[in-house]
Amino acid sequence: MPKRFKIHGSGIQGSSFNWSGYAVTAPNGTSGLFTAILGTFTVPTVDTSLPGAQYSSDWVGIGGYADSTLIQAGVEADNFNGNAIYDAWTELLPAGEDEIPNLAVNPGDTVTATIVETAHNTWKIKIADDSTGAQVVRKVHYKSSGASAEAIMERPCILRPCDEPTDLAALAQTSEEVFDPVLTATSAPSTSPDFEPLLTAPAGSSLQYIVMDDNSGVDAIATPSNANTEGDGFSVADGDSQPDPPN
Image (cartoon, rainbow, N blue to C red):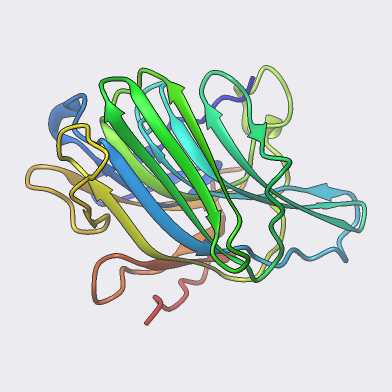
């Protein structure tokens, strides 16, 4: 089963061996604060010219930043020996990724993933391909800490025991990823959350800017942009250069 590596760093900037993007964390680890997240992003184009296998995921989630609970939904963009593989998935840690075989996604498609706590520990997960009109809804029971909300580009763990950076996949090289908009809610569980921009943290919360490092922890291999003007969008690019935020 995959294990998310703890984010290193504090304050408004940190680094991770497998995450790049943004997280909002509740004040003093307050549980149950975040009850919904919505993220729209474009399925990236993966570089298939590289030998071997590389993997990447783009997702939004609730919990899991500083604890072992994480409910998430997103898309995969991988290169496997010159073949591009794209799929949509949901995941509830500690269980592994659960692919959605009846929702085909393709590079360039706009996808919206929504995770809403409709009642205590009851969640509705929807992934919609806005380009094709297809969508899948899953309803699950899950106990998340609710102490954080994230929008992340990730290189997944592919080797057990998943406790060292060498257990992580090589990061697939892809086109620049744009998350826009990303919204979250701290309202009580409901079918109609009161969404606000993710990058405008609620009072007392902290906005975490996360750079993905290589296995040595020295060089950045994926870097997020600053927030856009509205505070609801950002980009992530391969390498150590910060991309421009979306308009």
